Image 1 (cartoon, helix red, strand yellow):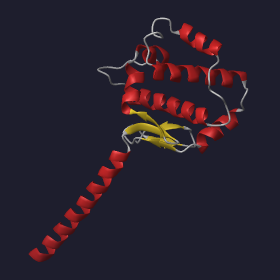
Image 2 (tube, rainbow, N blue to C red):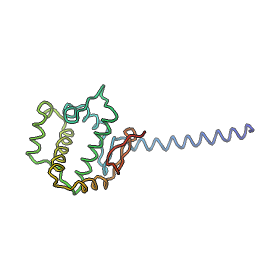
Image 3 (cartoon, one colour):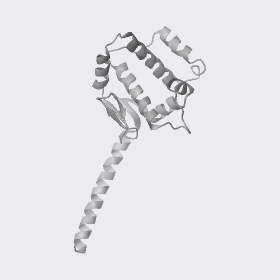
Image 4 (cartoon, rainbow, N blue to C red):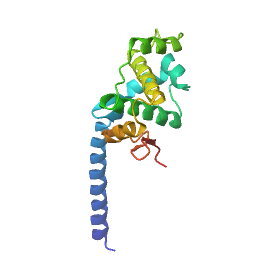
Length: 173
């Protein structure tokens, strides 16, 4: 191969790499959150708050090491957040807690409830309401799953991808 051809090929490869790099930057900028459900986001700070708050540790059995949790734990917690958020936005079930449900949830965490951030309290309470709905069978499971599948869900590639057939975050492997 002549040196002219090699230079042209090298230039073309560099140009392609530059375009790919620039386009991926805009993608990462748009994904500045852990998860998004119908436009409502779980920010990186919000995720960190859940993981590192005492209520988050108690309710979700989080055991962060230096502020970090295992990838399996992160996938499970994000899945829970997405499911609760998608259902909370749907018409299938009302996850607004009654006063009695709020009191019961607070009583379940006597050592961490009072000092917990409101966002963590809300997630834990809404999850408890959802558990009650599932146990009481007031909403058919198929309807709950359909409502989650109907939601527009985005997951940061750092944590995996949303598998709508399994209605959960799956790792890239």
